[in-house]
Image (cartoon, rainbow, N blue to C red; front, side, top):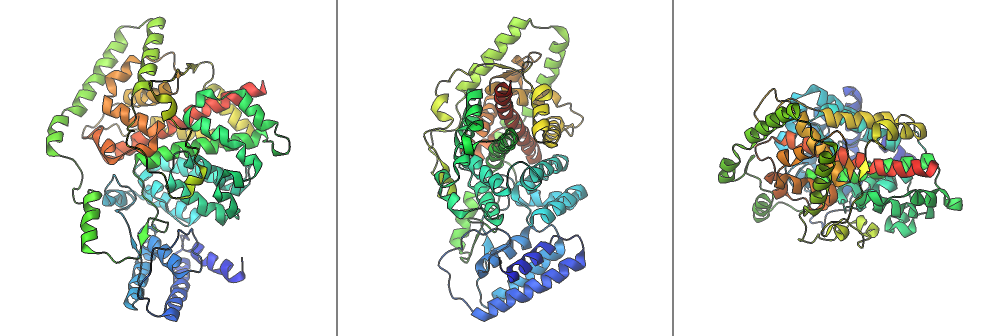
Length: 546
């Protein structure tokens, strides 16, 4: 990288400083540079198409720089930076140069933008987490903005993700981002793929590897099988798979590297679930996040209709009346179950039967497929092995063996294995699981002082049940009482085929609940999925070691 690039890199970085004068200085220089570039080319009459995606910091291409400035004008957590860059773009437009504008309506297709952007205005803790995240990465991504509804969780999530990607660890930096790309591509999650393609190139990754797994080193190719099984059928993972990776001569994986890789794969599989489940949109500065075409009236109307703009929050009035008692019914059921719990204890056999019944049923819940997925146009197409996905074995249910939690649990077994081979990470993951599982504001829709622990446990255990994991002390009969069919379809789609999640599905479960509560559900789904995948991977590693 040339000297001047290094210098300009530093200037973009300084926009993340908590010191206002530092930021002002950096903005001054950036504004001068950009204005100089603009004046050098004079007015542009037309641009054929929007520029390719670019990461931070922008390359020298003016369009990339402008897209980057647009992102900062919209997303930088510091108000002075936002205001200054809005002015800068306005000034450039006044010179007759076409400037980009955002596509879409904010960070999520499902949640109104103003509701998301309101969070940090009212919550100082969220604002300060956003500032830290921006300082660390030079961007505040849409996932973090949506997770901002739950600042305690977001803090734990960002700490863990930063550690996995940036801090000392067994794997080199470019390998980490590449593994993120491999994992996200299993679900054609172009949002995460694009984010990590940028990061991969930024840390010096070889662009050739992005043409597909067969262009990457043999060592990473060997990880492909593990990636597939973990994403779609983790119960099929055996110690032989681990042995294959450990004994591949010069391409062998050490145990520490393998743990790092497994944590990254499961992190990105489950983050793809969250991304689709919250309808996360492309970053403003990335492909699909902005356009240089001027808005035309007709286009606008179409977008507004397609994105369901206009209506602020909820759905057809008719539906609302029928859903009206939904929350109360759920609360009543929780109360009854609590009373039954105190009354009678079902026998061990009965408990086992209830689990098997729920497990078999969960295999037969149809995800929202049948409308075939549009194959992706982006990099993930190079990583797809379309012959292998959840749908190939869920037709009328494959038999999933039962994994008894008392034989191998996260608390008693997985946690210590991760901590031993990749210090501190076991601790961070544990905090993040606990945070998602125990998070509560004691509210349900408009009701206050509600104990929601029974509901949270039903959701978590239902997901583990879909993976065949059974807790002996849990009565699986509760799941059917608390989770209705549309909710089960949503959960199954989100966890197994997240790329098929639609806005309609998001809206059709728990219709009276707030967006923040639905985001909370998605955090539970994401963490429960990650833990289930991890348990199978760690059990296989433990069996290999013993």
